[in-house]
Length: 416
Image (cartoon, rainbow, N blue to C red):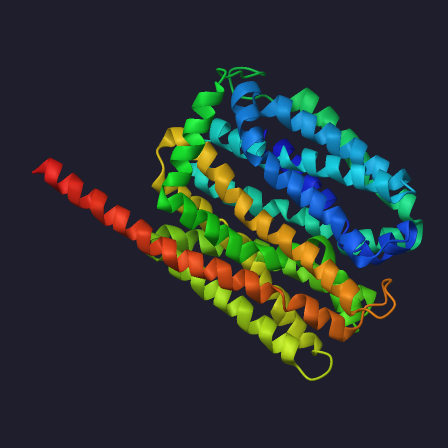
């Protein structure tokens, strides 16, 4: 059960990341500017972030199997439409539906893990799901680069879409919502109940701390892996296409390697979770500063350090979910997780758009002939997002600790 769900999530990550190495090809195919190219990822991230809470409610109501199959069908059809699209509007519509299908995968797989595994194994397989799912981004780097270069746009994306057909058959034949039933249905929720749950979750400073942790850690890696990494390495740092693809692959491998390590650290040192986030984000800021201020083109070894350190920000964002888990009662975990999951994708959405706008502003004559100077201007916009995120993390960790201290004192008083 877990393997089938994991494969669907892996394909979702592949579809999500497939545009990262196709950005330059997309500007030529659709004759678009950097801002228009950024709109692809903007819409996809907007749809993904906006659907997190509704998808959680759908899974509670209709079960993982039905929602996961719906998401897989949407992604398959949308990626096929993207392969055949020749106009910019048609391609935009396709990416919107890719985002919708993508949004329906991870939460479903987490629900399967919680249903099929004993309680003591759930944390391990949750982390393993997120880690192994990133192999989809590896497949979207080097293999997709090869496919675009040798097969062309249409065949490469049709081949990518075909993965969903085989997996849909596997979901239909194999997947069950629980060990006792194929379809698991939950009770309906009224609008008032949903609104109260979301309001109560957001009111707790621990949920807000988790949101800003997720906001601060993820966006740099997401912007590079989904869209701007390949153009930045090729145009901004004059790396070859093969090297750019390998750098993106290395970033994904860093994500996979860091996930279990951070999971162990969080479990061993739960009182230092916000400190871990502050250290990781500060490291990301430092390495980016060295790259952007390096005279001329940054050496390849420095770009390797960049993608490794930036990649760690991906699993670091998961620390926000752990803070939300320990700050909310069980009946509010889904709503709290949905709120927190929006943080990093909102930041990524803003960054993707701003980079495109700045590249158009700083590129003489427009088009995709971006200069290293234009990329330095564009990538420097990250500092504004980091400043906001770090300020809020420090602010809400103080408030969260006050609430924890107050609850402990009240507990002692009740015990006395």
